Length: 388
Image (cartoon, rainbow, N blue to C red):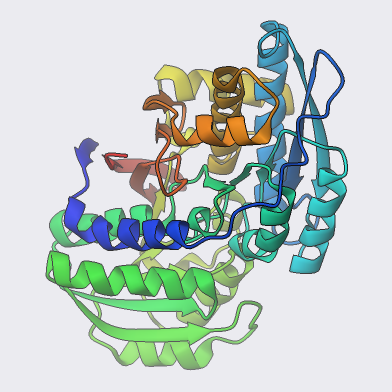
């Protein structure tokens, strides 16, 4: 395995776009947090614990609970105990919005969650109105910049996709790639990054096939991909989409080395492996691949606590919660505006899931791990850090 820095030019377009969005985002009408009983800090948690995205939300809930237990056992934040108020964001945007509104009625100092980017965007107007920091888990590069109160605890697609394309071009020698991606923000944003990276790293995008999330038949797209001269496939969608795509690719006889973005262990186990050659993944970190160090120690503790191995999103949420706790401690106050400023000014640090720091765009995480599956196990090929 190697660790290196990402070339800055390919990432610059994403970073500049995020800063531009941040500059034109609306300000809040006034914070609702800070009105908490003495000795208590209320933190909202908004995660999908039912529906198709529960594979993300349930492990994140466990990771946050571990962080809260640790901080409270250590005496809390500036002597105050952290209390979680959690709501299920479910499987659709309306449910997510209702969940956010219920949480804000509890006057939290901040909210953490929203691993599904579309749900994050759906609540953004209410985030501005509430005037409290919301630390998002979604991967869309524009998410953290969509509001002055929004922050990103997950290395966004601009970071991880650029890392994946750099690895494909420089480490694997790939010169022609194809895209199979969903039509929404996730797929569109990833497509933009891949096309920008193609110019930077010297490869060609020879085919791009698009589907709607939830489609149950991708045979047309798979047959077209079979006729292309692509050397590698990049797949972007939701977890359930990957199962459908694998079946279609297998039926069509497409067998390319493939990056399957953000593939979770539970989804990997359900794939038709005949649809791919080597399956690559780009993540922020991979707990199952850790053999020593802080991530390994934490993963062991997680498995002892919850009876299952942690996912990447569990580790992201654990780090995200601790970043929030650091900001509350630095602010010395439950005032949301003070916590917002402290998040922007967080010093660079290394958590269990990569490099973190405050930034003008609201992005808090800056690492990517590239690896592949070998005999059912994930093998790390490269770890890449982007300077905050």
